[in-house]
Length: 254
Image (tube, rainbow, N blue to C red; front, side, top):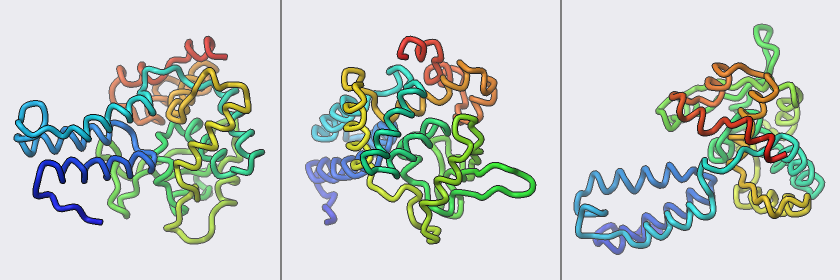
């Protein structure tokens, strides 16, 4: 259904429909905020500085923030990520369990993980003995939040060196198929159910915290240097890294 963009009300509804879709696809709240800000900048009659209010969009953004809290939450410890992933697999959600572990070990946002295709998993070569992921391939016209493409991530974490093999077993041979062949809402529900079964309901982790948990775990156990963590997480500024990497807080969580 294509809504006409001839009135403020229709624009409000169309934008909310789009926000609903990218939320269910596992996008970050930054993506939603950027869309709203860009629209209001391009169309000065909208937003706080204009006379047309996108009230539905504002409420949707508020709801998004409540459902997917941002980076102020504590990192997820590896022991809990592994426990929840194991429970997800035992519940029959192997794909969801692998997705969670991949987000943790590769410092991926949920939306980044869900956009991966079978072709993005790269086999080891004589020059590199590790499996790898190719993020935001330029061949598909994709780019990161920082407008970068073809970012390489080695699956070289000592916690699970066989991750690439497990991911390869889920591939169908069709390069354009999703690497994680499930819908994000289903994985999110499986994650929440597994967390409750593991007795972690009171903690209320969200999947985004796996991205914070990975670097915090690697720094706490001296598995990677600060520079290596920064490169792997694709953080440009040190302030962003300090916000997302908090290995001391992991000790408080365990």
